[in-house]
Image 1: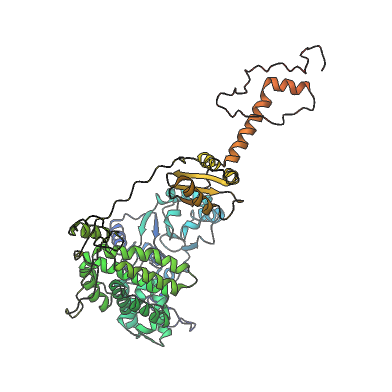
Image 2 (image 1 turned 30 degrees about the horizontal axis):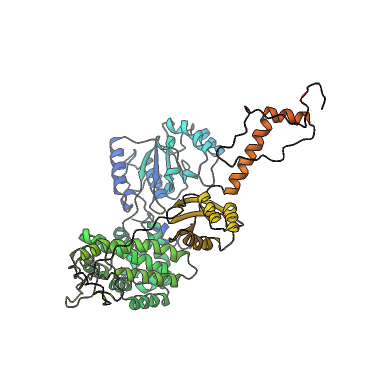
Length: 607
């Protein structure tokens, strides 16, 4: 029901939008929130009334409206009833002012603009005072998740033990941002998205009250576009009435919202599943020329793919009031003709393709490429179908001795196999066969067993690290390339035949190509050299520089070297020669240095 006493115009003559004019005034008018209404009804009838409620849900499902109705129920008073009640059929003493948001004891606060501790401190100071005229002082805080951490903490004590004359009602669209300490002190109600069928009935009832002529398919479009929000659906209906000059038609709503014709989306789905690329592209262009957004077309195509899959398992889903007759009838036919694997593959491709179209600066071209991929995939058997076809195929006798003749099955002696899966879908008249991709697949005419690939030849010089690669370049007298490898290559992953590296910023642009060619020449096998997004390890030059720096540091810390430096002011270590042979002695603190003939070791000599 609409607000009591409402007319199309307000008192000052301004037009009142449908979302406000038909705002529910009691629990019976709430659409799609029956579980919450039942809980509150039982609580009020048994006297188990909570001190605080948390209402959460998407935009437009009735959170603020429910809060006002709840405040009205808490303060309900008529000449015959003076107690909290959910039966609000008779207008009470405080009802009108509460529903209009002007009652002195029902305080509504927008937490988005009152986020600080000072605003909460003001509430805490005022809760001590009794209500002016109503039974309860009710605080309605909308978008409560916007409060600051300090504000939430300041509210906790009052929320846990409020005065008996105070009730709190919170509303939020972001329940996960509300601290658990606040949630634990409230009764929580999750307001559901409103079913499209219920929205269609609600919109039809409002259109009848307004005396507006509407088409059922147009109402279904409005309900789908609202995505479960009653306020959004009424706003779209208001716009559609203005757009159509007082009459709501399917074509007008489609043009207004930039939607695709649902029947034409079904045609597009059929063309794609048949693999008829020309017809699919023509249909997409025709819809685009009439104003349909390519992204909206693909979204509708994905939605219809989901509908067909759902109808395969839940035939009663066709009773949805928001579906058109074409979607019900032809969707059921597709559900019987297409396998779940085919539908799942189409769904996955659409999910990945739609973001590409959204981010493209040429959306219609990207949408066409998406349809081409989808139509080509419709011709392909699934992996298990292909393997089954190959396994069931008769073996071909082996060719005779090689006497210059060609083996049967291919001019170059290569493998030849055919695994085609064709689907048959009964069309509406039951006489034709059009669709591909069902479970059955004809056996191929001939099959030649593939010749096993030769085992890869082991590299004469194995390459398992960047050091091996540098040594390989040196052994092939590629000294300049060896220096380049040591300076620019950062290893990420090296396996036989595959090397994944990252490069320094000064690496030549053609380095990866040059390395691939040289590796094939050096090892006699094909290598895949790829550039990784990972940072990779240090280059050989960086490793050597780090070793030299460590050696210099160790040398400075050596007592003998330190004594020499102290005896010769201004002396410094220029270089440390690292041993290159495995049997070369290491320089450590326990090694005695031989006496230098040019240095007198007498301690009495100042030099």
